[in-house]
Image 1 (cartoon, rainbow, N blue to C red):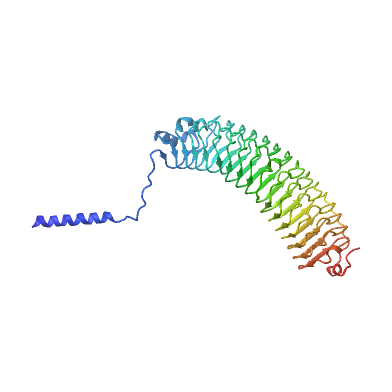
Image 2 (cartoon, rainbow, N blue to C red; image 1 turned 135 degrees about the vertical axis):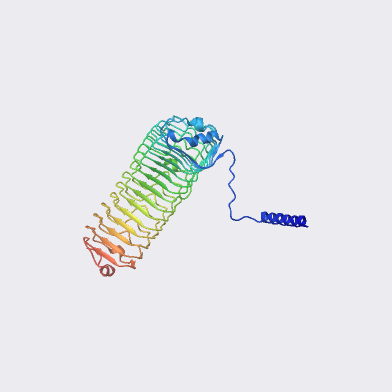
Length: 447
């Protein structure tokens, strides 16, 4: 009988154990299973004294890094010994002050899941040695490399995120990237004095982000962008003293977000932007001292942001904006000291924000502005030393805010605005003749 009791108890405990093992355990997270050839985590090397992770990578016969690879040492480390089998970096790669003359220690590298940054590497002149690399998922950054000249070694790259190239005094071209067709980010080039063109980017058809060039003192034109059809972001060009024309941008045939030109003193006109139909944001042209006309913008019907035209010493008219009908926000014209009138805006119907005309030394009147009917913001006419009359504003019937007319020492005729409907308050003072709004409406509007 005792044996039978023990047998029953044993069977009962076995059943309980089995039932317990069938319950789903929600209290613990299943362990992450890492493939035997994947090094889990990042490899960071800051000196030859802390390359133990490199040794572990070698000893483990790994070919993939699940995190980042950061080589940030000027010590002469034999990376080719440790990284001979490296094929994939799922994170980003940063090379900083690495003394190597080429990148042959990454000769088997196939893809980078994040960004690729090469900074302050004193001997690198290109990407020579990257014989297998075909994919960079995010940004390519080339920063402050004194001998860097071309992008040779990246011939297999077809698409990329952004390209950021800053402070490389020897950079001559983008040779090596000729098979690149699309960019999901921006092309940003700054402080590369030897770069005169964009040779090497002949295959590029689309930039989803911005085209941004600044302080490249030797840059003379966009040779090399012959197939670029769209820039979804903004075109930003600043301090490019040798830039003489925009002709190689003429294949861009889609709307852009905004256009900004600052300190581009070699430009005489904007020929090369002739196929852009609309600017979704702002048009800003500042301190381009030799710009004479806006020829090149004739297809633009609408500017949905602000128009800023200032410090354009030789701009004599707005010819080039002949097709412009609507400005959705402010229009500001300041320190354009060759303007005598407003010719070149024959179709402009309305301005959705403020209309500001300030400190234009030779402006005599508003001739050429005859089609504009509505300004929804302020009308401000300030400090125009030669302005004598407001002729040209006869069709401006609606000003939806205030009217400010100050410090125009030769202004004595206001008769062209006597039929204007003004919603806000007029402030007219310190001109040669400063009548009240009541006087203007009654016809006592000139001296």
